[in-house]
Length: 220
Image (cartoon, rainbow, N blue to C red; front, side, top):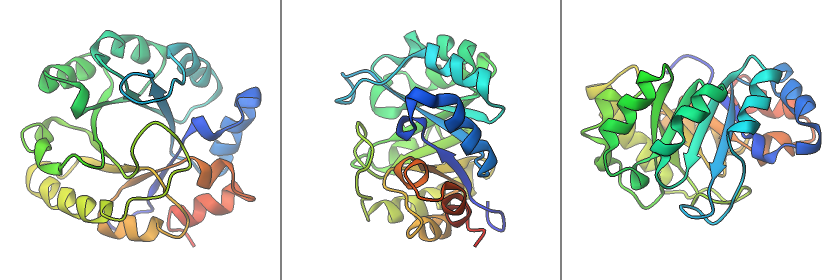
């Protein structure tokens, strides 16, 4: 929120999976707040990543908040498995959930925080009815499915609009942004209203991840 450092959520998808424990230790020592887990099914998005067993392995190696982003069809089938594996918060896509209120209440009933994500072409207005029930909204600033994409500039306006909506309807809700986050654009995203920034390439591929984290968090 305004006046506080921006949260940073390194995306584990950009880490070296041959040495996952070291990647998690790096994130912790560099000042990460969350570990972002991108779950893709090859159907909702054109890529396949991993399932609950990887989240379970991550949970054994870190005390950071495990932030799980389900880019999958019919997420209700798998939500419980991811919470049991160690996910502290679970985000589903508005575009994949025909009964979104039911899905959000299901997540909360399992003891996790509940979030909704929308794709770049989806307007924030679709969230108006669900906003009071959410712990976070994850705005996609690239089309989901692959890492390393360039930030879509119109996302800035969506962040600002969502910020105005949440001030009226749910001031405690967090706004997270995922896609094309860099050291250069992080300050602008925070100024527009973002509370948490997902950083994959910008963190794990940086020559100095700790320095990158400080810049993305607005600490220098």
